[in-house]
Each structure stands twice: as structure tokens, then as C-alpha cells.
Image (tube, rainbow, N blue to C red; front, side, top):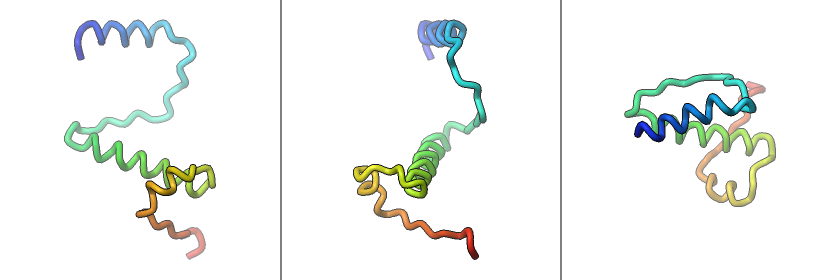
Length: 73
């Protein structure tokens, strides 16, 4: 990160009092970052499917996911 970008981020964080509180902080080795991001997106998509809030466009992108209800095993 450049020094200008770092200063801009610092100014944004200091001056922004409306930021939500962090629930979790995750530290990931950079070689795993992309995989973690993909997993996070898939989990969010599955959550939307389960809650019925997924859009038709998203459904068509996620046709490769099979969900199984495991709450009543």
C-alpha cells in the first residue's frame, strides 16, 4: 500500500464515527486469501438460498450447489 493510500485509509477510519463494530477479524495467509474469499461468497450464497432471499440471477450462477437438510438426521 502506498503512503498516500495508507494516510487516506487512516483519515477515513479516524473521521468516520458511523462504522459498525467488528464482529470477527480473520487473519489469512496471503496464499489462501482467494480461496477464503470464494468460500465466504459461497457461504453467503447458500445462506441466501436457505433464507429464500436469493435472486434468480444468483440461482442460475449457483446451479452446481446441492443443499441437503441435515438438521433432522
